[in-house]
Length: 102
Image 1 (cartoon, rainbow, N blue to C red):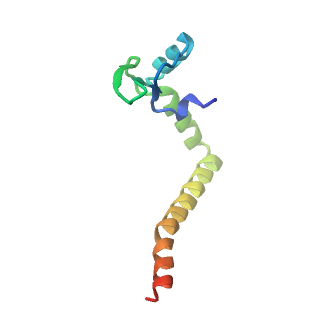
Image 2 (cartoon, rainbow, N blue to C red):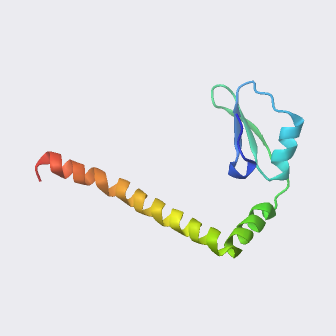
Image 3 (cartoon, rainbow, N blue to C red):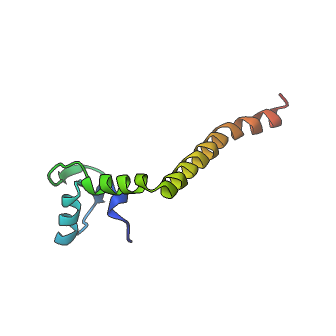
């Protein structure tokens, strides 16, 4: 399984899982905590690096915000998601009314 490190907020390991030193180092450098649990879900401990302000993410966000085309694309996507989310929240109530004869 592959995933971008910028998409991770934490890593939870359940049971007897092994993680390489390189992976732990990369996660700690980015301030992503690694939580350890038993197979039954009992918390064993946590590993995390030194706190920082995630400067990599902030720099990328500022670069994108400075580009008018990229900023417009993000605004369009955010607006479309908001409309789609509100439709999903409202639509079930319309379906209930039509079936219940209200």
